[in-house]
Length: 108
Image (cartoon, rainbow, N blue to C red; front, side, top):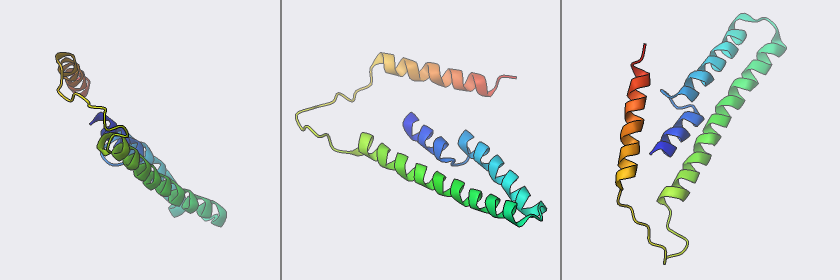
């Protein structure tokens, strides 16, 4: 689950932090396109916008493939059997992580 959330953040999907930083770059480049009379600078800004968008799509596709290979794929060795029952330590770490996330979200 956390790997999927990190994947979406790296790819720049809203509402994650990767989207916020990417959108600020897009807005700056769009401002250059709108306000600048220099043709070369406008062309460089347009090409940069296209390349950043393409890199975001490629990152999303690559991480989606990685996610499916790791978590949804079949094991290479059929004799390996994984125990998928959660233990107390794992549940406790999820609770601690949740409390820490809520604490930082609502902290002044």
